[in-house]
Length: 94
Ligand SMILES: [Zn+2]
Image 1 (cartoon, helix red, strand yellow):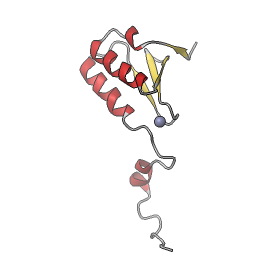
Image 2: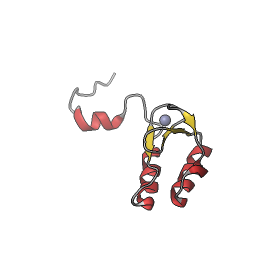
Image 3: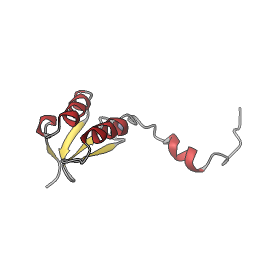
């Protein structure tokens, strides 16, 4: 089964709980999926894995916060164009 809502307070680690709680307040949704859960952003552009028993909880909390910070991604994700197609076209100015 996927998609069941879970609560940030279900997480065993204090640092991770803190990050999850803040994100949920910002509109992210937490679902019971994967190893422990997945966060889905409000606008649907991103999802972030949440490990249930991270080896390094501080680092996991930081990573979750950082990955969540990508939202909202623009429809044409600029990281993609930066990675591949910088000199695709000369900019045409009209
Ligand atoms: Zn988003």
